[in-house]
Image (cartoon, rainbow, N blue to C red):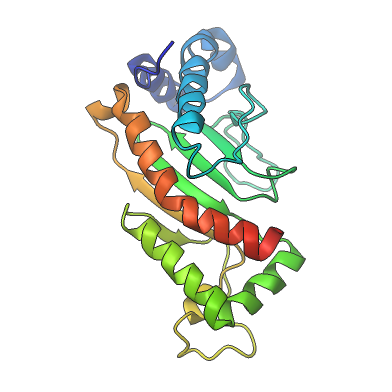
Length: 227
């Protein structure tokens, strides 16, 4: 079935889940997640993968919760907020053997925001060392500048899950890529306020536009840090 948009009932479910964030309520109302949200996200990602195959031919999509679709369960071990669930749908399409260490495109849908992101959220130790070295090379650094500029045309800005307070040793604060050198991961992200378009095929159009704009950064990460 062609993707018709994220269901309005899915937003209603997430609003209620945010207000009644406990396991008993979820189990009593999980049909909305299982029968409406999950199928819609699978349709969205299936069509997205096909739509961007030219720009991102190596993406993997595993059409199930725990595969490409992220679970609702929150990791509350180190959080003061012990709410067990996230009130959002999210999915990841990646290129590589391990989705946690491979460049990936991420999309998130909730009543508060629609988010498109792409990159590597946390560099492994070897990746971080290579990233900082490649960043300072004229050719490699120049390619990264071009990749980030392509993402910026679609409104996707550099982001980092974690960064240093100042550039690492050996990098001048005046260097053109000094800010990027602080990153311990590199992602280009875009967040939008949801409106009526979320419940139409335009959500797929916007996701494909963002993924295509992210593609040069994806290739840079693959070629400079993974290959």
